[in-house]
Length: 396
Image 1: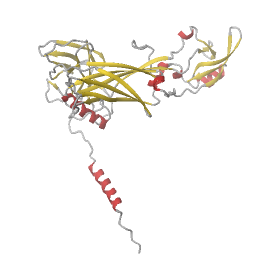
Image 2 (image 1 turned 90 degrees about the horizontal axis):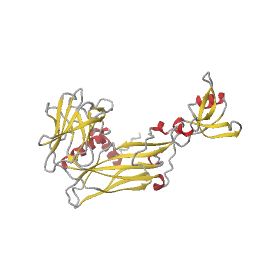
Image 3 (image 1 turned 120 degrees about the vertical axis):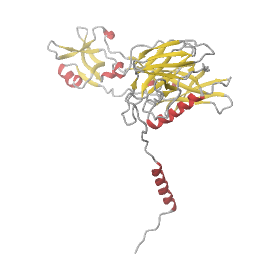
Image 4 (image 1 turned 180 degrees about the vertical axis):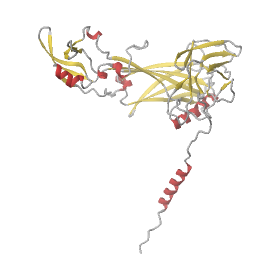
C-alpha cells in the first residue's frame, strides 16, 4: 500500500504564512454615524502676501456610498484676526471660496470662520508662518517618462515641514486640419464638400490648451536632517501622455506648515492611499484644528493655518525631453470620393468629418475636389478632447 510522504519543510512554511496572512486581514467597518449632510471638509491655507487665499469646502460621503464629491455651496467664509478684524471670501466656484491678497499684521493670529447649513465652524488661531522660496524645479528623463523634482532650503532652519501643490498646463494640437465642410442641397441631402466660406476663420480649431491641478497630497519634512534642505521627487509624466505632445508647463506651489499640520496630512495621505483619493470618504480620526462651535460633538475634517505661498514655473517641450513620440489616438484616415452617396456612406454615416489632404484638379471655379480625407471629429477639432482655445497669459 502506497502512502504519501509528509510535506517538505519549505512547503509547510509557505502554508503557515498563507494561513497567518489570511487570518490577519480585517474588514474595515464604519463604526460611527455620518449625518445626512456629511461632515464638513476644509482644505487650504490662509495666505499671507501677494497671492489670494483659496479655501475648498466639501462634505464627506459614507464609506458605503459610491465615490463622488459633494461640494459645499452657499457658505459664508471669513478670515478673522484675534482682534476681531474680518476679511471676507467670495464663492468663485462650487465650494471654492477666494479672498483678495492681504498682508497680515505680524504678531497677530488669524483663523477661518465658516457659516454653513445653519452652523458655525472655526479653526484654531494661527501665527503667521514664513515659507522659503523654491530654488528650482528640475526634471529627469526616465524609462517610464519624465520625473519632476523640487529644490528648496531654509538656512534659518525654521521651516521643517512642507506641502506642495501644482497646476499643469499643456498645449495640444489636433493632428489634422479641416479646410472643408459638407454642402447640402435644398432637401437636406449631402452633395459634396467645399471650402469653409471664411476659410480658416470657420474651420475647427487645431490649437488648444488644457489644465489640471494636483489631486494628491505632496508633503515632506527635513525634521531628521541637520539642515533644512529639500530635493524631492514630486510627480511623474508617463510616456505617451499628451502633456508633452507639444509644450508643457507646471506651476509648483510651496507652503511651510507646522508639525501638527504635517502629521494631520500624513494621516490623511495614509488613509487616501488605502481608500482611493483624498476626495473619497475618510475615516473619523481625520480631525484637525477645526471645530463646529455650534455643535461641538460634530467632527470636522481639515487643518487651516496661516502661511505664505511660494511659486515657481517651468516649461518643457517634446524636443527638450527627446523621443516622446506622442501619437494622437484613433485618427485613422478614410479616403472618400467627393460624391453625395460616397460621402453619406463612407464619411457621414461613420461619424467622420472632412479634412486634409484632398485631391483636386483645376477646373472653373478654380478647382474641383475629387477625393478628400475624413477623420474622427476630435482629430481636427482640439476642443473635442477637452481643450480650450483661450491661450494662457503666461504662454510663450
